[in-house]
Image (cartoon, rainbow, N blue to C red):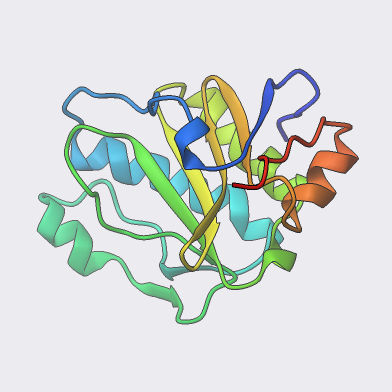
Length: 167
């Protein structure tokens, strides 16, 4: 498993502090995108259920055939990873959790392992409507460092927690 010990960490008050996504801006094939998504699922599977759709077969004759060959792995997963590619020029992935208790250092390490192997990709972790972390080749961004579990993880990593001044 990947280690976070040498990973650059950044704390910012909101998404405006994130860098421009380092996720690749070249055209990517559906096999490349789904292949990395399969690796995201594999990284998270030991930590909880994943889905809704499981691994996508990469040897299908077309993207449509692959979509129809993929099966629902878990209808209410701990880690929901959308199975559709937003556009053909980004290796960007999302992981939605229903509860912040599903986010731990082990989850960040597992996803960091995927990012380390695929330096052109980016991964966001969020609860419904609230993005908490963003991982890419530049490191891990903690958003709203006053909110659990972000504060807990920031404390565990001995990160300085910077809060925005009251407006």
